[in-house]
Amino acid sequence: MTEVVETDLTPDTADDDANWWRQAAVYQIYPRAFADSNADGLGDLPGITSRVPYLRDLGVDAVWLSPFYPSALADGGYDVDDYRDVDPRLGTLDDFDALVVALHDAGIKLIVDLVPNHTSDRHVWFQEALASPRGSAARDRYIFRDGTGPDGAEPPADWTSVFGGPAWEPVGDGQWYMHHFAVQQPDLNWNNREVRADFLHTLRFWSDRGVDGFRVDVAHGLAKDLGDELPSQAELDAIPKDGDHPLWDRDDVHEIYADWRKVFDSYDPPRTAVAEAWVAAHRRARYASAHGLGQAFNFDLLEADFDAGQFREIITFNLGLAEESGSSTTWVFSNHDVVRHATRYGLPPRGAGAGGGDHTAEKQGREWLLARGAEPVLERELGLRRARAATLLELALPGSSYLYQGEELGLHEVPDLPDSARQDPTFFRSPGVDVGRDGCRVPLPWTREGVSFGFGDAPADLPQPDWFADHAVEVQDGDPDSTLTLYRRALALRRELQTGESLAWLDAGSDDALAFSRPNGWVSVTNFGDVPVDLPAGEVLLTSAPLDDDGRLPGATTAWLRA
Ligand code: NOJ
Image (cartoon, rainbow, N blue to C red; front, side, top):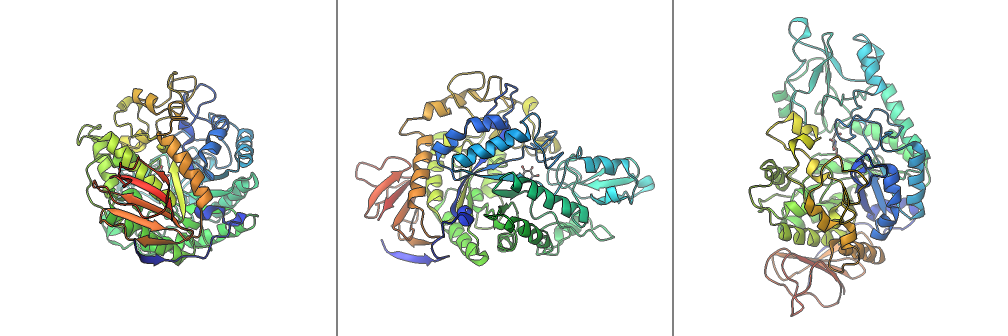
């Protein structure tokens, strides 16, 4: 095998504490679906604390906790009533402190989710705004406008929300408020000084409690410039999103993050942040700047098919972007918003490109869900086999890997939840168009038996299918071939092998295979096709499926070697 491309990013990553995030394996916990300690069917913070030994044995470097704040759960907790408290159903601030201690004692960092684009409609500010007249200081914290037509009975504009349906909601006195997401999620006005100051307070509140970093929800949405005349939706759609769009990815959003950076850097080690910003790929580096949030998600692999060409293009492209920003890149296959990758990879490929942001493969997963898992037929085993290969490739890449709870158990999406059990607002706001995201949020199975497979002592609030039993932690623990064992081995080896943030592509001997090496001779080879490929010389350290009798790498398999 010959080296064909050298992508040299930064020199060896210093492993001092300030840089822990650059190549971390971060495990996302969706708190209400992880572990239920008090038999109410809802996961909670003490439940997570009780499972810290599991997280330690899994070998992750950090946990990212999706929202655990008081919330009516109109959007799974992304509708926050109070940014500086814990939902009583999930525990107390003392429980939170206990979780921080337990994680830190296990050598695991903690990232919390921050939701600054919108509050919930139960937030004290919004309640105050509703009780206050037009033009009041209380209304200025949100985006209120007079309606049009007689008595303001028509919306200020025909905008549609991200979740479907109108983006403006009347409040009964001729005024309307704007919401990018659900009706219960009014957008904040980030031109308001009090809003800005309050979030600095929130950042300090959690940082003082020992939180190591923040995942910033809808990071590209905060800054808005609506002007006096609101454009129509068609006009909005026609405005390029290149820094001056009225609603999305405005250049001035980075002034907000520059202020946040001062707070992050006032701690030792500095607190970290990762932006959830669905922006054009070439604009991502701004969010990842060391003067701003420091790191940004790239969702390109999540949108791609299981395809060597797409993967290679995406990897090369994103390593280049990381170099541009001075940050490290991020890799994601699954999270609480998308169809699980074991399932996506069991559906026929459709073809997506690097940085295109067209959600192609993910969209296909949604279409499958909409058909309640009927057509096209899901190839479950193939999907899981590919997912294992993809994950092993991911964990060998330079940069951070964000893993979603349950992927280490090889879980598939649950496509056939009864409509009566569904909770996701996208299901209710777009009937017949989007079946929603509940299928990847079904509580984890810990044991083979039990009323909720060990999730707790009561049935889970989202019903678990019978086949979850076969995926339970208890079933996989100690099984050398299980997906859980693969993740544990891979994460342990990754820690041992971790090296400088560079990658050199190798000639893999087939267009359907990818091979690369890291500076210390750690080699990863993935066969995306069907025909076995020869492995390069070296000691085989780990494979996602057995090699064939001739020691070749079969289809849909990854191998790690030491050259
Ligand atoms: C992105 C979050 O990941 C998603 O779950 C949520 O619905 C929206 N932001 C709105 O907060």
